[in-house]
Amino acid sequence: MAVLEARGLGKKYGEGWVLRGIDLAVEAGERVALLGPSGCGKTTLLNLLGGLDRADEGEARVEGRGLGALPAADLARLRRERLGTVFQFFHLIPTLNAKENIELPLQLLGRPFSECAARASALIASVGLSHRADAWPSELSGGEMQRVAVARALAAEPAALLADEPTGNLDRASGETVLRLLADLTERHHTALLMVTHSEAAAAICHRVLRLRDGRLVP
Image (tube, rainbow, N blue to C red):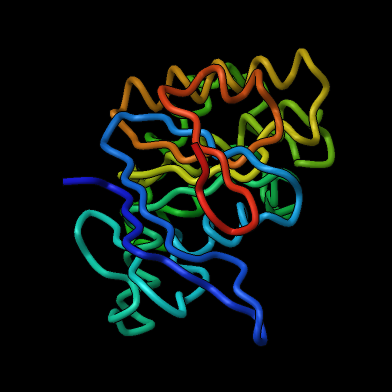
């Protein structure tokens, strides 16, 4: 069973279709890059599969569960438990230090304090930032912030990771570090990865590359 799946997925704004007839499946442990020009619907597709938006036709599924039919509370819980997200601009909480940012998703799930602390310590070590655990986001470089964001996205051991231009705001060296981490951590945890990117270097860490044009997947 696919971890992430789109079946005839479509989304429109006003009278215009942004996406139409999207069919795709991402398996556990598989890394898939989604490429295409600006405005072609890449982020919209990511938002539909991540439960941040509702489709106007077809269905988005996570581990076989159709998102469109889920009540809001169930959808929110599925997103917290089974999906991790990495953004271009990090979105760390400025009033929490690096380790606390990683702990936050587990706290929201009601996990015991000791479990949150142990998991965060293991993850911050896995991205090479144990020595920066107490640093505030304002004290971190862009590459360090994104490494913390990757660790946070994996905190709840999600089935799938959705990444929207994860290296788009980084210099080349920092971007390469983040890409190596994404490849290593998704391999280690057998996590599905769907990554929106303009970068061929980012696409190169993936098993498959899909291209979107004018709201449709193209060969």
